[in-house]
Length: 83
Picture 1 (cartoon, rainbow, N blue to C red):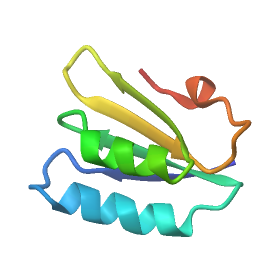
Picture 2: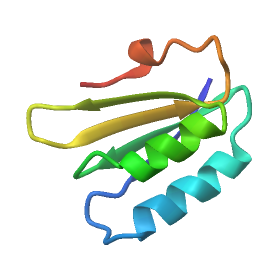
Picture 3: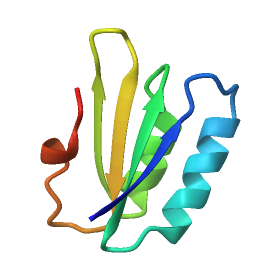
């Protein structure tokens, strides 16, 4: 499984959504997006869910959000989470 990681904590709206959407278009069954964000990106989570992706989001102790998105319906996103 190949991770495609992006750190968008320093980016202004809408750049995190733009970057993540581009990555989602290229995801395969063997890859997943691991995104760090300074807040919960609800529009991205909604978009990914509507398109049938598996989604996991979790806030860490520092207040940063870890977002995992995958095309593979059987992937265990919890196992890939680094929080």
